[in-house]
Amino acid sequence: MKRKSSYEIDSYKKINIIFIAIIMFIFFYCLLVPLLNFGLPSSCEGMPLSYCKSRGLTRAFSQILKFNFSAALAYNPYSIKIFLFFLVELIMRLLINYKLKLNNIKLIVRLDVVCSALLFIFSFYNLVLI
View 1 (cartoon, one colour):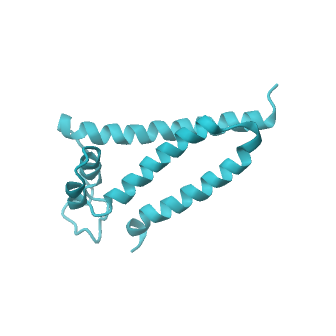
View 2 (cartoon, helix red, strand yellow):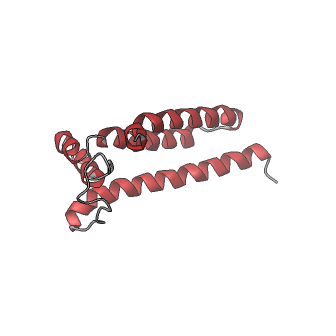
View 3 (spheres, one colour):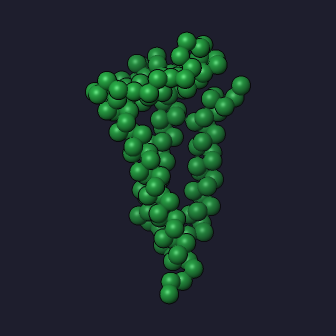
């Protein structure tokens, strides 16, 4: 029978793996959309940026992955901060899964929650601010 701490680590690692898979899917989707000429239409096409601040994020992420930052900013001025959120989260998830041990799980979980929350506020502040 596993100890409670071991079960917590396994559960936390599984959640991190799910987050890693989702973030990697976002990156691959943004890379493949222009190549396949396939994409989901924006629900706010034709609306001004002040009403729909997320318009152009897929195209902007695609440009960021190609290191074309000026084009990314032209598609969406908030794109680099949002992309950095996903990139930092991906790196954090990979490092956490690599470094997680029984004696430090509570500290790492607390640091993860605080860092992720602060990073989220920094990255998405302009999108949720009306």
